[in-house]
Length: 67
Image (tube, rainbow, N blue to C red; front, side):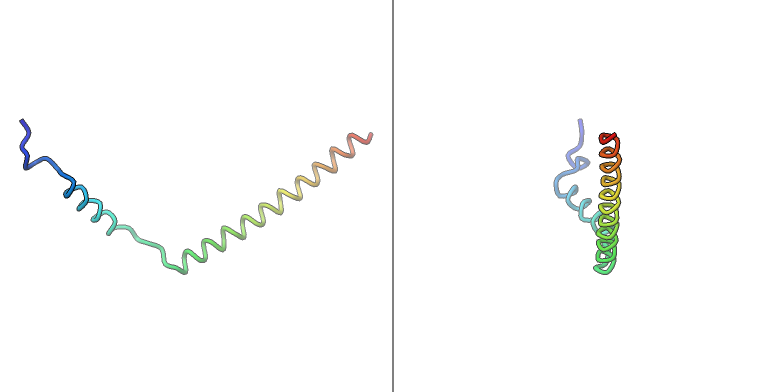
């Protein structure tokens, strides 16, 4: 039969969770700002490219339909 002493409880689990959270290296505010800015810039460029490709395809289809 298992010993009650060896059985982990909620308190042990919570202590382990706190210990793992102490190991996390959180990003600085500057890092978050730079990564957010990079994400926004890449998103805008990607959206622009999608619009350009869509317009080219639209003109191509219109040209084919007009034949």
